[in-house]
Length: 530
Image 1 (cartoon, helix red, strand yellow):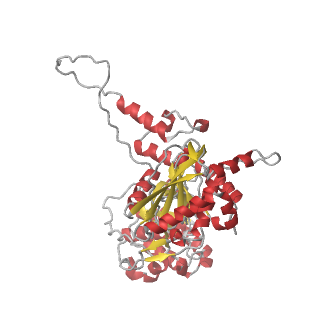
Image 2 (cartoon, one colour; image 1 turned 135 degrees about the vertical axis):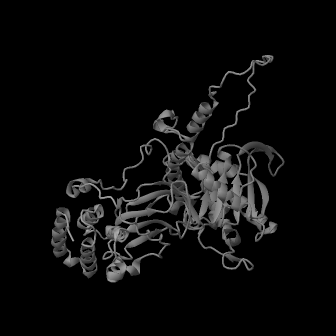
Image 3 (cartoon, one colour; image 1 turned 120 degrees about the vertical axis):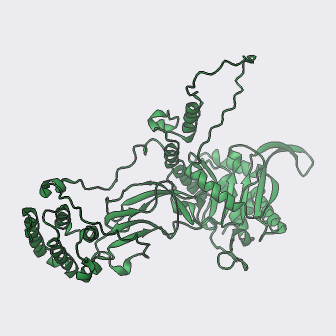
């Protein structure tokens, strides 16, 4: 059989490479030897000879590409390759590793992908970010478990991914990641059918210059150009609405684009009338001076709104009951003023650290309110999971939406410690940098709607909790003292919601009364401290 000069050069280079890959193990050597033998069976001058030989030569030291080379050999074969060289095929199998979506937080069963930092064919390093995701509690990155080449992305941006599914496949070095450390395999796509060799002979190709000039896809590691101008939620909204961020005037700090800016831009854009064809003149209508045209604009939910939609829908499957109480916090207000006007160490504290500590002290007497209902083990026989740590969540209104970080181990913290942790959580929440640790593990929640406005509230219980406290705005009102004199008082409404499947009204009332005692008589709180 005649072999052209290009094929001869390929054989010569393969022989040189075979000497260099001896140290890589028998699997690679067996495969390349088989590939060299297979090339000799191709027709002279075949483009598949050049392409296959080139792949072998360029990627002989890259385990991830050997699989591609094998498939190209199979597609171009003239005789059954697997029957001739079974060991070669077996030895290159199993080089793919799947990045499995692990449990990213307590109670989180799925995530939404905001953006990928890589694309198929890109190189990725271990611990480098693969993608950015949004859960019902946080925005964070998922990092790669492997060094290698991205083989396949199983999901696209904006897709919802359940835990336990493969996010992507990565071709790796088998010597670095042995089989025993590999995650569970995912379904493999069927191998391609053999492609019959073309009858017409393609023109001669200079393999060494043309094929070697193919660009190598690198990992997309640079951040989005919007990263410094908008939060991930706003960036997701921009993508969904197909809006260029440079067209939107940001009103946030340092020109940051807020979701309100995007909605305003979309409303103005959609309100612009489109050109229409000339129509038959209609009778004129009386001019009222007021435009009464109804304009409806459909706006997709942001990632955080989507997760809040799912979370609150799940929460409302819990049978709530509401218990409201009114407290006179005049004594507590006096303590705050004394601390703020101290001559040597003035200290400004809000009401919230005192409220959180009062709730924690009351949980010592009513631990049921710190529990969670477990229906995962046996739905017909639910159980209560009692929890020793008081991880009290605080509902926060952030630029990206409602988030509920929690203060860990309140039972072991002083009021000053609680105030400091509140300040830290508020700062990172405004910056959009809350971590899963900040957001996971809450046992009961306090929602202080009073700092915005409103007297009464019907709070919704957070999943994996059985109670929540809503705090209204404090008001100065006239009250009677013990002698019957009219004095100034400060009243605030406390609205509790509890899971009526496990909490009865009497228990909730006693818990609320305990909290009221600690806040109306702060000295009793001091006596209860441990």
